[in-house]
Amino acid sequence: MLRKTRIIAAAAVFAAITLLFLDFTGTLHRWLGWLAKIQFLPAVLALNFGVIAFLVVLTLLFGRVYCSVICPLGVFQDIISWIHGRTRKKNRFRFSWSPARNRLRYGVLAVFIIALVAGATSFTALLAPYSSYGRIAGNLFAPLYRWGNNLLAFIAERADSYAFYSTEVWIRSLPTFIVAAVTFIAIFILAWKNGRTYCNTVCPVGTVLGFLSRFSLFRPVIDTSKCRNCGLCGRQCKASCIDMTAHRIDYSRCVDCFDCIGTCNEGAIRYRAVWKSGKKEGKPGGKQQDWSEDRNGRRAFIASSAVVLAAATVKAQEMKVDGGLAELQDKKAPVRKTRLEPAGSLSLKHFAQHCTACQLCVTVCPEQVLKPSSSLMTLMQPEMSFEKGWCRPECTRCSDVCPSGPITAVTAEEKSSIQIGHAVIIYENCVVNTDGVSCGNCARHCPAGAIMMVNKDPEDKESPRIPAVDTERCIGCGSCEYHCPARPFSAIYVKGNEVHRHI
View (tube, rainbow, N blue to C red):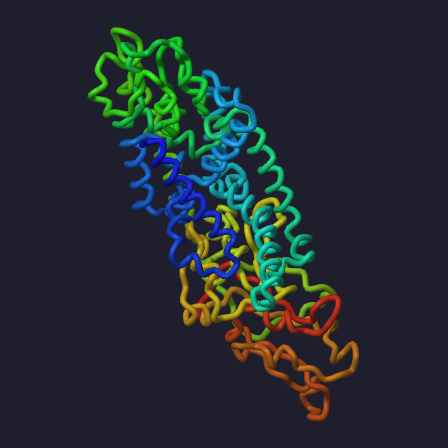
């Protein structure tokens, strides 16, 4: 029953998290969004100590249940491994004991923590299991889901149910798509051949929880008085953590899948409290593992504390933003020197250091304003661009679904008063000057009323009218940039603020 319960729970959580990334309407996040917030790295970056404490206590009580039930990448590996095991009957018992590669595990964890402290969250997102699966689901599974939705809508003749995923969006997301594809191939190969290799050699979350699981109160134990050394449990262990020669289980790698318990025909492996296992656990006459060893205790404390303290060093900085009218810049192209992040991000530094690049916000953005960054320092983290739409003041989907705190929750009313940037006009590109026609498109569509049309020659009231921006009222929504008819580059674009401000 333990194995069946674990499979049912893991399947439910995996399906729910996958639907979060496939749901382009954003409606499921009202009921299932909490699943994203209980993931380990998002909770650490959001400094959600309640969730962190819950996951630590869960691991100290029951072992790495998080890896086998809550982590979507872990369940995804189990699915791949299970499919391989069913392709040929002999592959059902294809695993074997392998020593822990501790130097690699701890080395990757050390690099991960250093990158986290240094604010290079674009690098940490490459290793984080939740973010990795989010990229796979958002970039590989979501397009297939949308195409399937369009097919069903076409059959049912419901054009209002179409979900478009244009070629332009594919090209714009190409760097992230490549990263997602490479991640998928790597995870697939490792899981297909060796089960949980990624979890126990590369994944930093698995390494941290592996420290803690050494001291779990409930764990699978081997009763040597019943064991016949048939080796079935070791050949079924996808974590390769059962050494039948020594009757030993490496609890730092065991993910509590309970496959070994279901395989043993003699009932020699049982999931029980550690204080009830006595001397039957492990080698005859001794314990299987000295779980109270001080050295391991210090390692567990240092590792878990380092991750939490690394996230605690991430702080937002404030800086003064001057007001006044938008400056005139002699530019032929609207190149953004300062990137744009959604309302609720507080500042560019805060966003970059907290974002796990899971891309839930990219998935639910109805206007396709958010796209993955191709910059090295913010690789795969979302940034705003207004080629396909503009950020409507009433839309708060990105802040509603964000699990790790880079986009804090804001209401529509609060969003309308947050300035993420301000519009800058390039008069050389304005159709009033290039084509000699009247326009005013930017002023008509500005929801904040920050753009006014003034005479090009203040002394001549008959002169053509050109736009002027009041940066004290502009919120940086991008409506003017999106609706500007100038081609190939807009005559008005939004320049981001390093620190967002309330107006």
